[in-house]
Image (cartoon, rainbow, N blue to C red; front, side, top):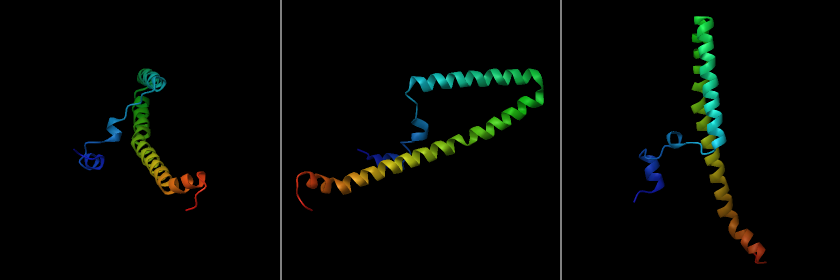
Length: 104
C-alpha cells in the first residue's frame, strides 16, 4: 500500500489537474463567463480583424498567470493547514492539562 507521500512523489497525485470545483454557483459563473467571452470575440471579429487578434493576445497573457495564482493559493493553503496541525499537536497536551487543572 502506497503512502500519500509516495503517491505524491511518483506523480500519482496532482492537485492542479484533479481539482474540480464542486459548487454549482461557481460552475454556473464559469459557463456564463465563457459564453460572454465567446460572444465578445465574435463581435470583435466582425468589427476589425486586428482587434480580435490583439484581444486574444491580451487574454492569453492574463490567462497565463492563472496557474501561478492557483499554485500559490494551494501552497499557502497547505502551509496554513500544516501550521494549524503543528499548533494542534504542540499545544494539545498543554491545553488538555490546563482544562483538567493539571500542570505541565
